Image (cartoon, rainbow, N blue to C red; front, side, top):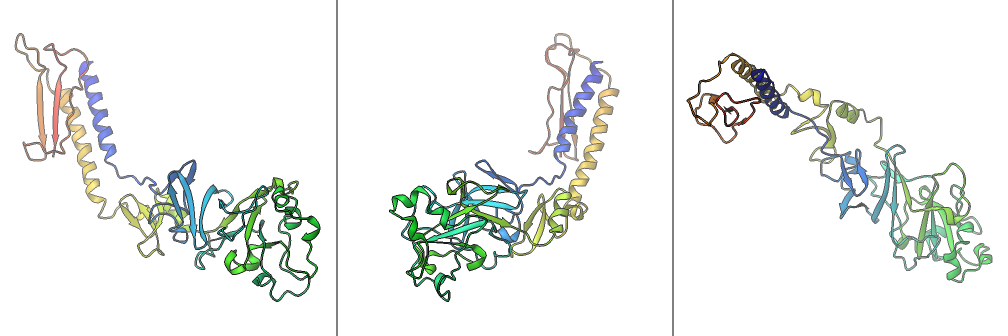
Length: 358
């Protein structure tokens, strides 16, 4: 019984060691920043994610930041189910306060990013204190302004916020009857393709979005922030095939070509295509040798007779085998010590086996 238990323990420990040598394709691109999961198509590591979203997210002191041409924004949430991000900008006006002085970032993305992300269609931008010379009002005679409600949200309701009371705003002045531009002009992003306060000559802005199926009651209940929709364009079959074979989706050094990251190897298709490549053949040879060695050790442990002991000996028998053609162990040698169970036939320590694998 002692020999059988000894053999089983030896086999299990060696098996665990050799399994750890097996090549795996852990997804090293998935990460976390604070309580936000960062997964495809986004990433914070260079080379990970979709190339259309490269150099976009940065984790700074557990705060996830989103950076585009108009400035930096804090990421409040990434909704992978609905392909949406929610951003916050500290110089954005809300229902409780107006931030003027053209300090806000507004929002605009680089032209090459535009196919991948834009503010959602139910996101309204309310531009505040714009000059009569603003491009918003050029070419729009009379009451024909670009200002309009977006998804049931607009300036007429926004004027009812406490922030306007502190500014001394009177609701009767909200209408535009040719005496000058309105104090607030609500627009959809796609109408002007960018919110640049300097170019638009506006003092500030607010942004709100609606994710509820029903209209919320009043501007005090609106969700303030910038809600983006993102898309990787097309069906993205490449990444689906890559992840199905245990890989992680990334891009090459050119920042354009997609690659499938399979451990230390990259593939232009999926990880199955690199499983028999030259880069993995040495590992396959190690696994074959590991299996043969495990069988030999089990056979030796069950077939060798119990060693004889000198009277009064307190040390257990020591048997040493060197595999690989060298009697001198290397620094990478595996040493399995003190595995025996049951009583030592010589008393004292348990049997000790030492295996040096070159």
